[in-house]
Length: 309
Image 1 (cartoon, rainbow, N blue to C red):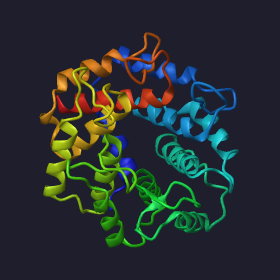
Image 2: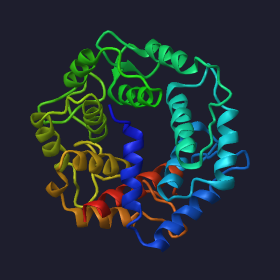
Image 3: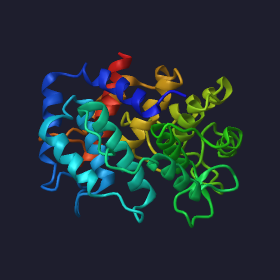
């Protein structure tokens, strides 16, 4: 299987290269200013953490700015973080951040790890595996999560492994499909969402099981998620768009040859309207502060739209 994260970052970086220099510079400076003294990055409150650090590193990598002192400081932060008690999403963020630093700056944050650490992590992931073939959000969770199954599949690729049972994984993802053509996050849900649909499509693509019938349904569902604002909303129950759902929806439409099914110019205007004057992106029109996570989604959205133009 191709490396999903590496291929995604290459595609997005090519799109970001098409953006005006002033736009790239503004957001690069914002991300660099957001780095804390400990080398990590934080959300809107609290201390630096692995989740936001991984998003900031992804943003810097897209802009070609993940090198030099910022990269060295971020590597120092990552090396001090991993532990057996780290939540799953944070640990996967650690793996993502380390992979980005290795690819962009040549810094190996895993150099001092035990020789069999990759195998140990692969075994750790199996604690989250459930009987339906997916993976739960926590090792005590009873229900598999479409999104967390996707995250673990991406992490498995970074570790050089693949899903233990491809057929069961495919069956699990297909069980989350609904009549509207999209997918849900957990089994009891009836209405599809943009983000679980993107996760499901990504998973099926990774295991070469995203066929034309599934693709057509996904494109049809996501095209209905575009609002009058121009962005995509998370689901049918939410009236407003957000830049996270816009990014995941645009990415999935691009991977499904379906970007022409939405108004690309309106989507561009929506995302551009969320740029903060001092750099960074807001989550949506209601938001009042930028952060590093939504900055990645904003840059990624513009990159996909620029690449389609």
